[in-house]
Image 1: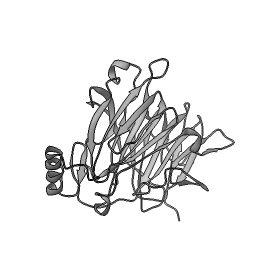
Image 2 (image 1 turned 60 degrees about the vertical axis):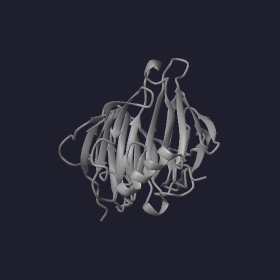
Image 3 (image 1 turned 90 degrees about the horizontal axis):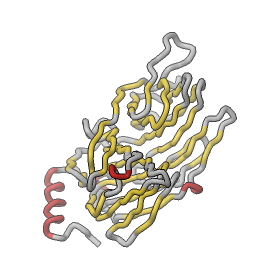
Image 4 (image 1 turned 45 degrees about the vertical axis):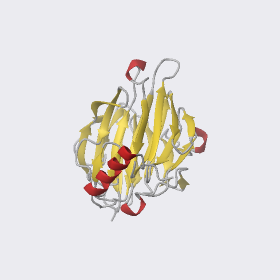
Length: 289
């Protein structure tokens, strides 16, 4: 019999500053780096004050990870050391595999009202792929399929599969599932998740009760925007709204279950590999060509 996943942990995103002074909310990345395996970090860089994001993320290195950036409002311009450049706007995705090493910059701009809303997810790379060739791809809004249900539920399939719909971001090494789900007030939604995957949601807007069956006793706890909900083991989750609607990012992936050595923008498996990466940054041999 299918088992509903329970809520393992709820964490409120925390304010921090990155890049050249970008004020953001870090949802994942402060605690145990193994807890969300294969995911390391989730940043919410939304703001309505250009002074808090306009200086952006100037040129900086990465190695050993993949980044997935999702924009809802405003835009982000990307350039990197392997010759790629592009601008992503509302509904667009930017996916980058740092692999053996890349330098890039990400420069955000708000919309006509100065509003920026976006998220960046870091997916770890297994040891066999840490030193793979870097790559980059933009995915535009019109390329992201949507599932529209008669009750108003809307699911954007960014990566992985939902029902019989497959998302356009298909080549992330850890093969994650990444869904943007909107649920109107007064509804309950069930999402199947493979039992071999870790899974979490980030509440973008509104609130809901997670993993609560309406027919059971008790009302459940409403969890609002800015929170990450990490789920335990099982086959599916439920999201139940009350008087307000909710919008969440649902992310799941198979754990890599390897040692993590992480400092700043570099994520390797051992401290020796980490030291080598920073030595190569110092002596100019970081980029492998």
